[in-house]
Length: 97
Image 1: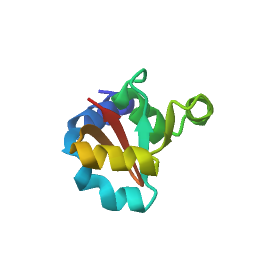
Image 2 (image 1 turned 180 degrees about the vertical axis):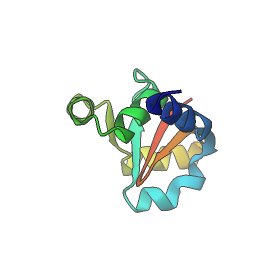
Image 3 (image 1 turned 90 degrees about the vertical axis):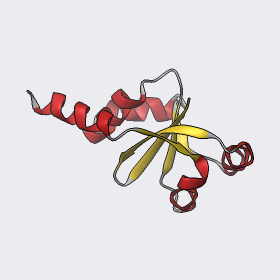
Image 4 (image 1 turned 135 degrees about the vertical axis):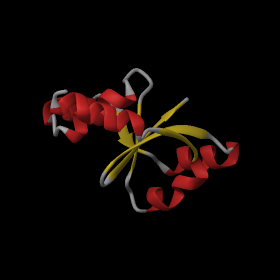
């Protein structure tokens, strides 16, 4: 199996559904990024792990990936929102289910 397939499998196996309340400490540290639903969370995590800077810069420019903001965090907290979560240290990527 190639290194890229192994990395994708690892990312996939470490992706989980978590309540927003479990992520608040990481949010306070500025480490949580929202991934738009038009993007595949696993593929996006893989691109970040592979440092595919051109793609990531384009996602950031198009606002498809961005730091979770205070209003969004408050809304998720009030709704006890469950999110898909993928950790690509030092970042945490989240996507609404």
